[in-house]
Length: 389
Length: 251
Image (cartoon, rainbow over all chains, first blue to last red; front, top):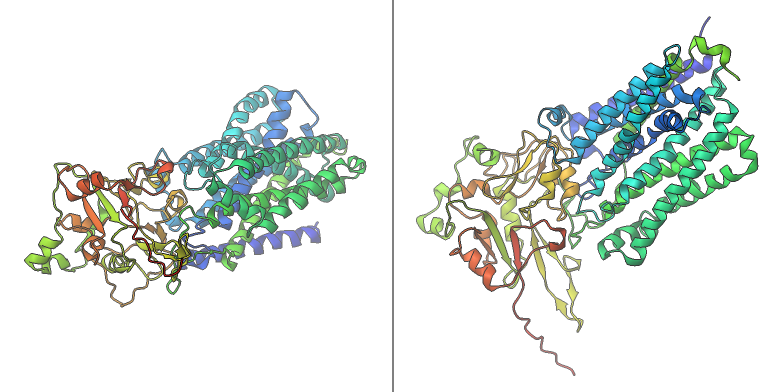
């Protein structure tokens, strides 16, 4: 039996995406990071945005598996393996997205050979490795027959604190810097956790929706209704944390902090910020509250996709608000970095085609792992009779 | 021992210009006093700075800083380089802040470096070991002063053979002011200091009470940039002691 046409198309799309990413990466490595839109003012760009985003979106697997296990709920049981596959794909891609950000990726091994223990980047490397291992062990346990409840319970107890650490340490990469008032808030770690819960859960919803449509696998209506309620809780927490951060800074923040916030409220990033609030938060919340969403999974899917876009916008906003307004911003500004560029007082950052190419490759890598995971670990033969219940 | 820049000095067969200096020139650029365990610092006298950029240009030449990058630059209060700020009477108020690495005692860049490529040497200088730099640019995010620059591509120089007295830095690494650590080894002050036509920079050993630097700092109410960030810079700024009242024809 030849594979269906849609499958062939999907695999080709992934293959082309991976090739584009690889070609862009090779081009960047041979020419230096000057081929990106980055500069000495905006030194971190799209690669770091996607790193933050991917670490966050990996939260879904743990919520569904560990959270439900510890809460004694069985309603997400059928989603377990899919959720863990999503997490694994996200963490692996996140780790990979650090590589193109390095000026000398061929020396990345030095981080392992001579780690500097005061660097949050080193802490993050350690917790991400542990997190990846936990996901792999979880998947191993869940694909055994029968699934060992005891093992799951032990893993749940281990993995929940690690998950909280992963998002906190990723936040602290930014949050511990005195040089960037907008990041330097104790609320950054809680904000990263809440955004992770929103995007992670939304990713499980969206993936389940797609897999239900292309395979005989079924998540079950009860699980999807449960996820809808979880999404509402998580997005409420996320918006509350964002609101209290913005409000405190707006009313009583230090001038430097306030200046960086203004980049979002009224400045160069205002379109992205208000997109985040209107299209990425308010619209999906309305969709989730509509009574018909309980029955129509298409609405739930739409809300999940919007929430994911909103969290992506939020990562953009967090990163660039601090970078666009350096603390010592006196004229003529920070040197641009390329020959012929003098100083760039009003730095704009526009990602180059190379960055978009590498991002395309990372997206393809992510979806390839999800596809492989769904094929090998979600659609298990012993499961099929149970499908559709 | 871990100063890569000083140890690689001369590796490409260049003769240090210090060798070629006359006795008198050497004496002019000599470090005044050096204690048993020096901790190098600098003061910038804003009363004397005329904003001429000499120090910025000689720094580029001395340290082979590629086109597009600067280790040292002169900031101006006001909208633009040629549009100075105005005082309360609307008159031009010229005020410059020469800015390079502040060589902080509590350097945020050093703490975040994942490979210890950025380190603080025994004499208190914040330096980058180019062998260990992986180019993550975390130090650039962490530096409150924005004085670190990155090698975005193959370095270009105004003359093909380059200008510097130190080893050049590879593509994909971060670089910044070294306080001319290669000159300190020859008992000479950094090149921005001896080249300043207004003698606005004072370099010296913070551990030597009799040094001119320590005496200036004691007599002139030094300020450091962004003191509230707790970075404890070893570069201080001496504010002008008096403002000459501007003669106003009307009123």
